[in-house]
Image (cartoon, rainbow, N blue to C red; front, side, top):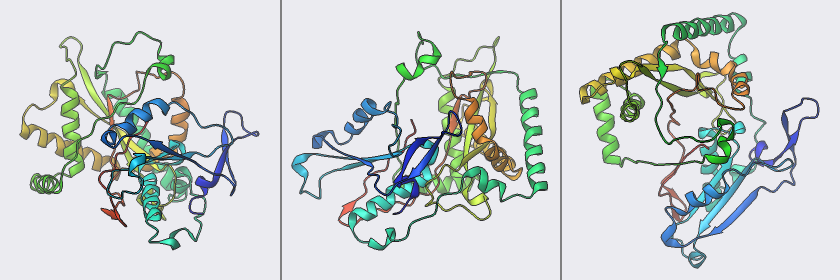
Length: 354
């Protein structure tokens, strides 16, 4: 009985229209799919399977998570053959950090080496809004939120350029029909240990964080696809996600399966000011890092977290392109995974959000 959310059913809230609640039920059995595939397809098959199932919504009365096991039936008794475990959970009750902990605990449980980890049930998780509210005094809330509102008003008044867009495809359908025409695409790049160490050493030498360096590279890559016109100047507007757990008092445990993601005001840079040299990109990384530090020190993460639910309610329905950023950047931080789980070796972990 590890996570209360994983033993609860989705139900309609009869007392509040257009809202739902979770009903705890120890008899609930989460969906576990064993999906056969050929060994030669182990790198790509899960993506194909996801594209066929990603638009399936959670039914009322069912759980909010499901698990897949993909393997070649002929490899059932071969521990050296590749296997994929897919963990899917509604984003309203989890984020990257807490879902990674669930995946880590699942892999640990599969090894049978720590049978005591599930003997004690966790309490229901504290919501992000509640955690922030109890972390600040009344005066602290007023000051934090007041500074945030002033910064947001200044940002809106001082940035009148249009938001740069990354051209993906021509759209010949109504934006309200996006769910019928759009799907998830994913591409990944991984650094090995030697490359990671070189990057860390370079960042230390340049006086920037790894997150700032990677964000600078993402900004540069995005700008390469944006056509800048002198008579119609644009600016890249980047949304930045941030974890609130360790900023609350007391801190929220990583084991709590919950959504604890806030953010700061967007980072904005005119398209024509994007650097074109390596040295310029390192300077952009420093500028980005200074912006993030200033925003965090001003309490923007907690301020935005207090109203995140209201913001999400406003974004339901057709997208408002006057408010959508060029792209978003988030970091999941250091995750709990191990290289070895009993007789199995973890080859890769691939996160994505639908």
